[in-house]
Image 1 (spheres, one colour):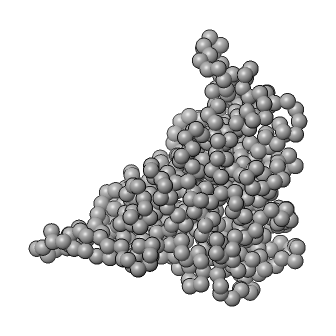
Image 2: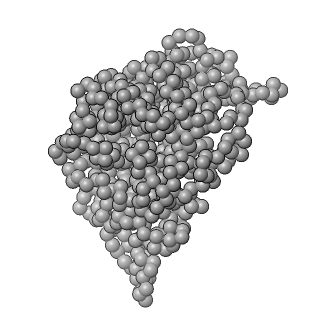
Image 3: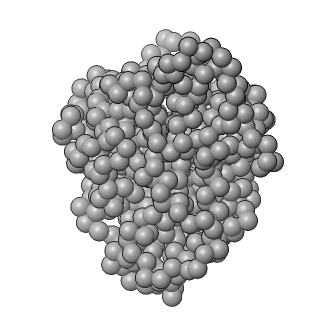
Length: 537
C-alpha cells in the first residue's frame, strides 16, 4: 500500500519555480514548464505531490517535539552531554523556551513552507487545468492541506500572517487569531462539497470529505481558546458528518496496536487522514523524518527489535503521564516498555555486560573496571544525577535506562537508515467520537442517541475488557484522551483546552499563561520585519 507515495511525491516543483521568476533574462534550465507539464489527469495529481512531500517533512519531527515535549507526556534530558543541543529539548519541559529555540523555529519554518507550497500548487492548477469537477477537487484538497497547516501554525503561535497569494513577497503583519480561525473555517467548509467522499486506497494520504469535517470538529472544539467563544454544537454537527458517513470504525482491541505498525496503511478503518512514510520509495523525494525508534528504543534492545542501527532512545515519558495507564486490562498498556526487559519471546532477559563504573559512574569502589552483567530494567523516574543545571542524567547504564519508553509506532526492522515506514495518523475516528463526547459534556446536545458515556465506551470497549464507564466527567475524558492518543502529538492541544498546561509536572513549575503560544522565532522576524513578537516574549 506504500505505493500510494508515488502519486504524492513526484518532484515537480521546477514547474512552479519557473513561474516565480521575476527576472525575464534568467535562462530556463528545465523542460518542466507550464507548456508541457502538467497536462493530463495523472500529471495534475502529480503536480500536487510537493505539498505532501513538504507536509511529511517535519510532521513527525518539529510538530511532534513542540506538541509533546512541552507537556507531561514526554521529556528529553541530556545524558553525559548527549542531546543537550543548546538546551533546546529541556527548555520545552521547563517552559522557559525563547525565540531562538531550534524546535520552535523549525515548526514555524515547516508550516510556513507547507503553506507556501500549497499557494504555489493552487496557482499551478488554476492556470493549467480545464474547468470542471476534477479541478475543483484537486484545488479543494490542497486548500484543505493549507487549512490544516494554518491550524497548526495558529494553534502553536496564535496571531500569524495570512498569506494565500503565490508570488506575493511583501511583508505580512500578523492576523488576529480569531480571523485566522474564521479563514480556516471558511476554507474547510467551502472545500467539503468538492472533496472526494470515498475513503481507502483511492484517497489515502490525501484529504477527503471527512478529513475536512473532522478538521472542522477539531477547530470548533478549540474555538473558545482560538476565538473566544464556544462552538460545541458545531463540533457535534461536524462529528456527526463523519459518523453518518459510515466509512470508519473503531479498530478492535485485537488490532489496536497494529494501527501503528510499519505495515499499517489504508486498511486501517480508524484513519481519516494519515501521513504515509516509506523510506524505500526513493522516487518520491524527501521521506520526512519518521525516526521514532531511534528516539524511543533503548540502545540495549537493538537486537530485540532487529534494528540495523543502534538507537539512542533519549526521550521517555514522565511518571505523571504514565499514571493514566492504570487499567491492567487495557491493550494500550502494551505500547510502553517498562521495568525488567525481555526479548520478544517474553522469557529471555535482555542482558548488558559493562563494568561496575560503566553501570554506575558514581561507583567508588577500587574495582570500577571489573566486568558487570545485568538485566536491563527501565525505571520510571528521571533524575539529573550528573548535573541539575544542565539537566544531565549521566552517561552510564543507570542513566540510559531512566524513563519508560513508548513503542506505539513499532520499530521498523526493515529500516536501513533509521527512517521508518509506519504511517502516522493525524485524524482518527476514535478522536471524532471523543471530541463529540467532550462537546456534550461541555454543554452540547446529545445527537444520534449517542450520550457522552456511550461515545466514550465505543472507544473503551475496543481497548479494554474492563467494565464500561458511567457518569463520565471531563477529567475522566481527559485521561481517556491521554491514553488513546499518547505519542500522536495532540497532548499540548488537550492540556491547553483542559486548563492543565500551566500545571506542574516533572521539574517544570512555570505557570506563565502566555506560554500557551510559542514566540515568533527570531529568524522569522528578521525575514519579515512586519511581525511583532507575541506578548510575554
